Length: 88
Image 1 (cartoon, rainbow, N blue to C red):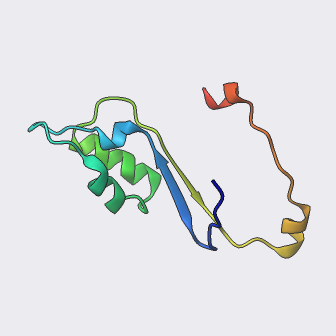
Image 2: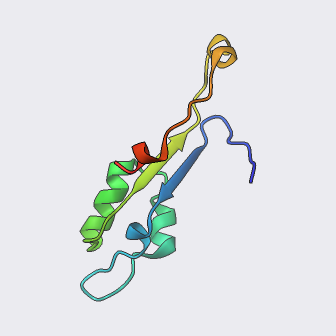
């Protein structure tokens, strides 16, 4: 899939640990609540899921496109991240 992330745009990725958080009544945190907080700071998203009742693993990653100096953009290079580095 290809898409353009506009300047100032943000992608938020989170594991099922957010969506599947359950409160004391057994209610799921769910997709709608997750969507509503997806632009919050990452730490806030994690804390909201924990406060709701999540006790399982949680992963949240946010990527925001910021403005880059034209010279920096011309010199930008791709970097490869080994899969084992992501596992830590």
